[in-house]
Amino acid sequence: MAGNQSNQSVAARSGSDPVSTPDWYQPSTARLRANERVARGLHPFGRDLGPEHSRCGSCVHVYSTRMRGAKKVFKCEVSSQSAGAATDVVLRWRGCSQWVARDLQDTLGALVAAWGAETVAVTLKRVLEVRDEPS
Image (cartoon, rainbow, N blue to C red; front, side):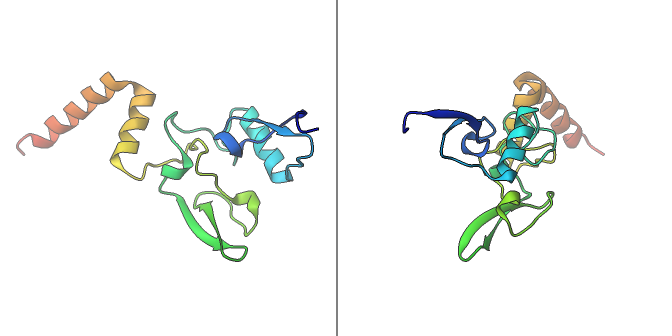
């Protein structure tokens, strides 16, 4: 039975990419719901996906808290929240449409992924030129 794989998938284990699981694994209702959303091209919480480069772990909306005893879990400020695992954030998930980078490196990476390096470079150059113009 160890070699048998079912057709069930788990979105949280590998970012938003479903992976095979053993036959004995029974995913929670919340996990099944998340898998259905990922299969439809949405974020596991149901929103549109953010930039290709984005990850929940690099978003300003994600915070850690202690729940269910001393276990540290991650939650999202822009999602509905509960004390249950259904609203826990997996840091490897691709960011949603509400994703905001924690730092400049994440922001630039997301912009380059979305628009291309040349467009970002030209835009930044224009912004700096306008900023440096005498008033």
